[in-house]
Length: 153
Length: 209
Image 1: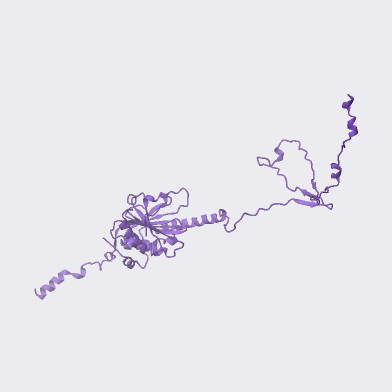
Image 2 (image 1 turned 90 degrees about the vertical axis):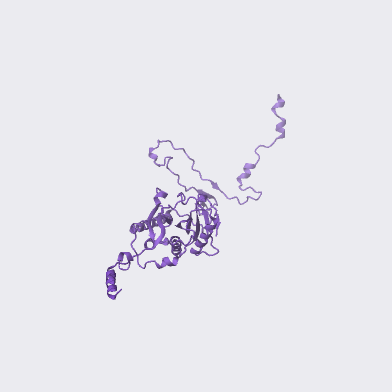
């Protein structure tokens, strides 16, 4: 039975490197190669697959485009539709020349005008024209009712 | 016996021509034999999904003397230089460093994880190797199969593999010495995990020191 304490084994440690019984250069080359590949994989991961840092809590900012509103001298505000319509079809080729010629539907080009109602909380009508609209068109005439056609029969 | 006779007999001995260990350069290089042959294994980290475990685990070399051990230990890269997911395994004779090997199947391992950078990991690994090949960690000479170091991103792990998992008295003696070899304080835990629980998701140690 051979036993050696740590101190005894350390005393037998050579001062200089001694040749080994296997191809140490190939072994070192494998390890260097693996380290090189791992380094490249880590670099790629950092570049393309890194998650958003948890340091920045909250949702990402999304920029919403505000509709453009123009107000004329009378106080009328007008929305302007600046969103361009997409021209691509379901297949995604976007070529209108390939589509059969169809008559384009006529879309009324109207501009909605909204006037702010400053008197919304008052009893006064917001627009003077509404007074005419609300006025009763047919008044009840009792004499006319007495002379109805039913009695003549 | 007369002086002449003594002189004649002394001359017949011919001391100057007799070869000794000191006079022979070959014999002078005495080697210190180890108790058994030891084999160094290396687990190469996978760099391709097609690589299987059997492709990655390979024997590097074997040695039977102290001098051969030092030659190999000085030549191979130290644990701190190894790429992540590498393992060194030093196992007795031809035991494969796997649970499935018949010599390991009924055994287990004393293991400790060194979290963080652990600047002295090379020294701790060398101390573990010397304790195993010098046969000073096991008084009964019947339990130790091998020693392993795992290189991982968050921790280094050093473990001693034993033949049995139920010899509590012998295992406790080995664990206590292993704890000293690894310079672990009272606050550090050394756990014994039977290989039979190795496939469990969260195996519980059967012994803790």
